[in-house]
Image (cartoon, rainbow, N blue to C red):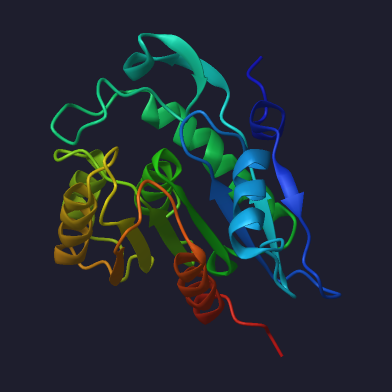
Length: 235
């Protein structure tokens, strides 16, 4: 019997700071990290927990799997890649894992949070997974964010956007990238942004000088403002 998403992804949850939760964020870590790891990284950068009066933040952890860019060694990655490059085919392992991540969204809905009050996003590979979930698997979410991430040039995300006619509006997108990123080149992020924007996604891209494969306070300040724009407190 297949493991449930909760058992497989072991999410850590940061509760809202106010009396009622009316929205949720699912935050996906980068390759080799964990939900708790990216949570602590965010805390270190901004000096406190990433928390909101009315929003809970869910940090799942990818199960370990063989990862080709690490010579097949086990790593906590959302899916395998043939190479860290947009110029190779997407690995088919992206689909079953995005189904599992989507189950976490379904669980939020079961707990009373509607689609239009849920945002999914992440850093690096987590951002890529969020793009797949938000535009292929659960496109009714309130928004998608991706920091220092990219899609393969023939990504199934693009194919879905090209062939879908039942949606008049896709979730809005926040992207950010360091101009000095040498692992995920900033041009890969810019091309991803342009491809999604050209297909009708309401997108914004923030590029930062002197920033490598990481995020900084300014990135997170902009992200927080964007989140609150799309998940405002309900009166």
